[in-house]
Amino acid sequence: MKKNLMSLAILTALSFASLAASADEAAYKGAWYALPGVSYNWTDSDLKADDGMGGFLRAGKEISQNWDVQFGGSYASVDGNANGKYKQTLLGVDALYMFSREKLRPFLLVGVGYAHNKLDYAVSGGSKDSLMGNVGAGVQYALTENIGLQADLRSVWSQAEVGADSKTVANTVLNVGAIFRFGVPAPVVAEPVVQQVAPQPVLEAPAAEPVVVTKPVCKPVIETITIQSEALFDFDKVTIKGKNNQVLDGVAAKIKEHDDIEFILVTGHTDKIGSDAYNQKLSERRADAVKKYLASHGIKDVRIKSVGKGESEPVVDCAGVKGNKKIIECLAPNRRVVVDATHKQEDGCTAN
Image (cartoon, rainbow, N blue to C red; front, side, top):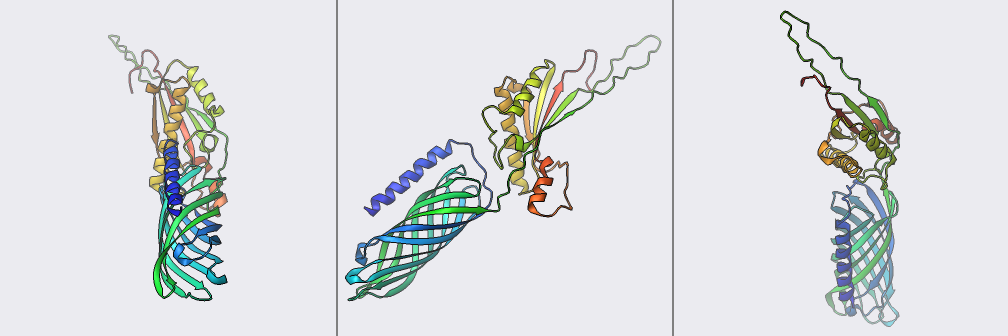
């Protein structure tokens, strides 16, 4: 039965993983979290003990897009042979391979650690300290940015004194717990800022004898629209809020009013919180998301290009600001998407 349960858990995790793979990739945040919970133990038949409840407490850390690490301990005490008790204490560390960072996060796990098995039976038993190993599968579900759930089913191998012998025993454990994440900043929402770049004056060359007319050199008229990221995306996400975003709908409508717009450049920017490589990737993906949204709302895709600048072009520095919340609020103008619409040059102008 325990083998069937473990096979079912792994198949379920892989099924969830295939569903998660079809969703938009979500970047990890590197958060720490606490994980208290309860467990149900199916004991090895050699232990001659009942199945029963236990509890655990672990701490976890997101270390990359696909990996978490968790460490902590668990304890279980169940009825054993001849009115005795079987008690197991575990301390260990687990590596979790995460198939997704969306709300539903299936994973596989493997871990090692220390085990203390005590058989407090009337006619036999003893205590045994040994190494412990476990493998399993599970799933996390994010209820909010800071609170979630985790459930996993794992096989746990360790050594126990069974009668006069020391044997390897395999318990199957179902764990269910609550995740409390910390170190995740809340998003700051700001209104979009629209800037109009005035056209450069047209210069005309002086006349000479014989009369030679020189075409003026004109710079293209560029209209710039700056949108704060919080108006388009949830914190640390690359999926635009809602099927119809009022801010981008307004931008698309404004562009479609001008038939002389030849080229549109969408540029993503981030603040300086996080690594350079992570911020560069985030800015590129957000700019590409805005490009695709405009293209899907009647703007020809061939006229649009998207680029990411990461944190390389800040508009504010906030060097003297202290405190995480104040820094996040101060840096809000740096988290933006800029849409530059280039109008067709006037007749009679030469390229600059």
